[in-house]
Image: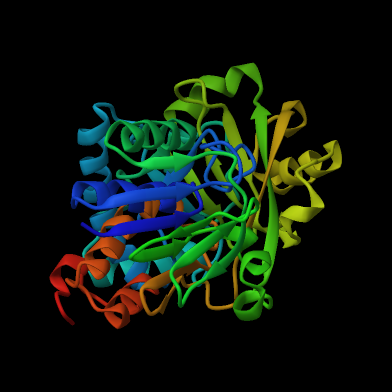
Length: 376
């Protein structure tokens, strides 16, 4: 039996723990706050899983495997924390995000529907559809209820023998020695070590990762006009409008209607704190306002602030250092792939997948699923 030490209790850390326990390994998971941590990037009411990924064909193909991995999670948890609403990108020009995604869908045989403006308006009566707009609809996709997933995985891992240490601050990590040193001086050593610390990575491993770029993202929970509350619940989740407007997730299971705008992303680190102000909410709603009927009646309810690592490639990085692995560059997109990544990482630790193959696949550069890449 191998001992796997995991630094970070978000979706990736918990997914690795689950996969390791199912493989008969011993697991120690270290999290600086509670599991789930309200300041962690994984802990929010919902996140989106969808096939829309622009021109990123590798990640589009990975979504099928991600759905299969989530099905295995639901089997373990005994409940499904996902609703299928469908997902839509609204194109405003031929070569914007919807256009790039359409080409990817066609190249990879992803089922889809192309809607004209009138069809979008019928499906999403809350939207004011510009002339010439078109929609790319996938009937598959929708919200993953992130908080419930994190809480469920934490509970399952504990029930199956994981040593999960909440509120445990890691002071140093020695990748070569496969060791984490806690604030109190205790050494926690494993046969394998994973660092999945999100935006805290640069401060945890400054010699290797001090130059990573971390971003602050604020999301807005919104109360729509009463006449559109039900249509928002019934409509597909919006992936993007054109290239400049962000995404929406519906108010199902009491999760709340959420607006996110990529243009609101800015440089920042967790040390700056998790506060927000009403001006941020006004900005985010304002990005959607040209496309909303009765836009002035949308009211911000609360903000959710998170931090993550992203570089210009927008590709996940899984860096092997001997028997240690660092997971980074999540780009805010890693949640939907969490269980799949966890299974693949344990495959590597058990020798069924090479570090090179794992890294290439996680970056979206390999066309093969990890379990088909044995000893690649």
